[in-house]
Image (tube, rainbow, N blue to C red; front, side, top):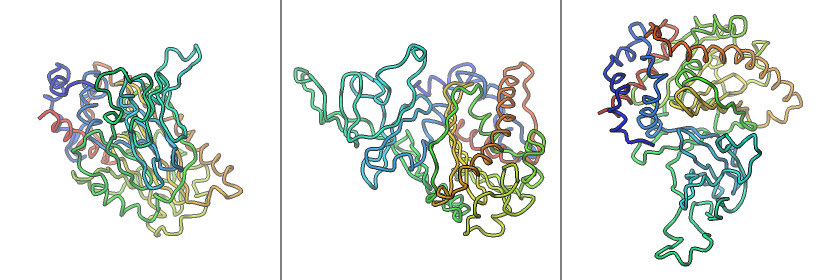
Amino acid sequence: MRDLATLIELPAVRAILASDLEASALGVERSCTLPPGCYTDPDFYAFELEAVFAREWLCLGRVEQVPSVGDWFSVTIADEPMIVVRSAPDDVRVLSAVCQHRGMVITAPSESTPDEWGRLPPETAGHGRQLRCPYHYWVYDLEGRLIGAPEMQRTCGFDKADVRLPRIRSEIWNGFVFANLDPDAEPLAPRLADLSALLANWHLDEMVSGPPQRLDDLPWNWKVMQENGLENYHSDRLHRGLHDAVPSSGLLPTPYDDGSAAIISRLRASHRDFSLNPTYKALLPIIPTLTDEERETSTFALLPPTLLIGMNTDSALYRIVMPTAVDRITIVFGNLFPPGERDERRFREVQKMVTAGLLTMTSQDVPTDAAVQKGLRSRFAPRGRYSWQEEPLAHFNRWLVRRYRKAAS
């Protein structure tokens, strides 16, 4: 963590903030891409951690990951280790994972193999009535209170009642767990009212997912990843023959409001009950509450800076992007299905087909994102112009520039 006022005075940050950032936040017909340094400069990345990630709602995972009291999982976003724990049947809370004794991450394993010695501690999950730091056995209850601290009786003025794991402000929206490191931030749910209404017929809060999948150390900036998922200009080109059920030309105009916490991308599909799998058709029963229009419209929403969700006619998908350096990210992703569908006899085979289609497209997206990051480091990297099919990126830029300016002020 670095002081924001100090970061603003760094030469690279000052140069980027002094550039015409507003040129990237205009309407799509006049807008251009952000300065390349926004993606490549480590000092600007440090500025972003404080200007964006320390002030916005960060998606940490799904409530299904902690179904029972005592279940917990760890997650680190922007260098902040956190624990999501179900402390009571109706209480899922977020705590700092940093022991208040000597700073040990209490969810880290106490032993590793030699090939793991040069790596940061992995994320873990578990179950229990207590959270115990493996370093000196300081023990916290599920609400974060210190209840055990061996051999501290000779320490002057020490009282366990004065010590607890910091609680981080959190909200649950449609089954997703969010946290905000800024205690004064505006609540999340009111800023998602329009998106909640748009997605109401999918009943996301009732959907279930399997164990989330994870990819570490992907070599590009977090914004490159979110931009790739939000725009469909590339779908007819990079994914030609794979994405034809949802053509780029089907982009629907979707206004963006500065007060919203979501950026929405909607496209008209080529046929009803489409899906992005090798058959182009939904493979599970159609969600019965969807309207005719919803059954032929592809809807993606970015809840910046971390969460991207996409809606199918029989399911949904999500991806959480977590930056670890200016040019490194971890992603956690999964599918969401209506309750009961996982009991279908053919579910596993259907899931293989869905995964096969997404894997093929991912095998195209991954090298492309890496190549974009490489190109952005070039002295010839542009501030390019957008196609009308990239309108959601102009909205994303607007979201970012407002936060850069607010922090700089």
